[in-house]
Image 1: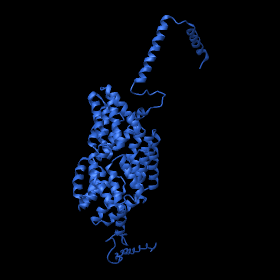
Image 2: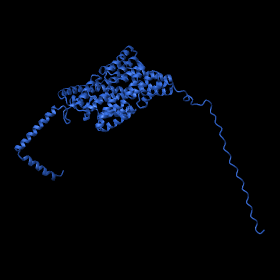
Image 3: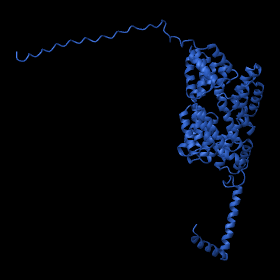
Image 4: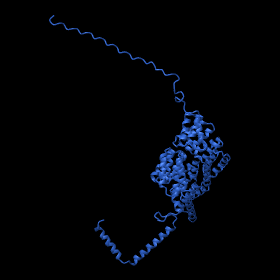
Length: 506
């Protein structure tokens, strides 16, 4: 800086410092001090935390930040946030923002515990927020919460409506797009899900965006991109609950591609980071069963169900017990499955349809899954409905749904196995062999029940006959055809000799 310019400024500061404070100046200083005290008091009693506060965030503040980002939160932090917001709204019933936060916290608690009692609480808090400030006045937090709640209950049509309503009113509000990714995926609109994900990454790159990107890439069959996006999410994760969720998702990706060692490593890392995570316990049980450690797998399944009574995990436990010859225990699990699904507060038609197809009444599975297909045209419903139709003997109709499940891009051994058996029922041994090999190449131990059946089916079909498929070789030896000979060129006519000129002088 130019010293010639700095000098006058310094002299002016010295002059001001030497000037005595007048009575008016003292009144100004006192007023300023009083204002500082008032601001400090407001910061202490305000419900929200100041962004520039140097204090480390407390449990409720950590949970509020996670809920606001659509990220997982620790159980203890959630409990603190719920208690804090319940106490606040008891005396401030018209605070729509706090009602929206409370509803989202209830919803995250429902996700962690699979306790259906939290869903009505979440809905009540979010509706109260919308009563205070309706959707048409831009209550975006409550609208987003309602969409997330609908998706959690697997009512993807309603989730889509809420997400699109927020997007229509505020296209640049990033919180609408995670709702839309989940809703479009559940409805089978994978192109729409990819578009919403790309817009989310553009508006707000971070943990939530990278998790949704991984989800979209996985559904398209782009495994490397899915894994890379989830690793980016791990880099963006801060709280232990967030890191544990990312580790769990990495374990799922490894399991689906048949890498049991990596899957087990990721699941166990998730449990070390957040021991209360039931999803990672269920994942570890799945891998232990594949590794032949059935007793440990049963233990983990039961622990996971004790923390979060998820019907899908109960179905896996029943099939594991069945594969171990513990039929009585398996039947007890199956008998409780319908009641568990009814109490879950979530649309569990897909799980119940899969159960009926393999262990109950396949005709009932077709009826149940046909209705579900009318609501949600996802690849998961297509695969389950195709398999149920196969179990009733209608392989022609089954193949159409099996193609919808496998041609989208998602690569799951279970889907390939189902399509292979359907093709075998139609007499297409070539297609059956190809898809059985694909299933076993993707994940050879994808199911304790169907994995061994896939190996047996492939062995029964055997290898293709020598010489290629049937009717590809002629029935008689090849004989070279007799080709027409080329015509000889016509002989040139001899030129007549020119007459000699007469001799001169004759």
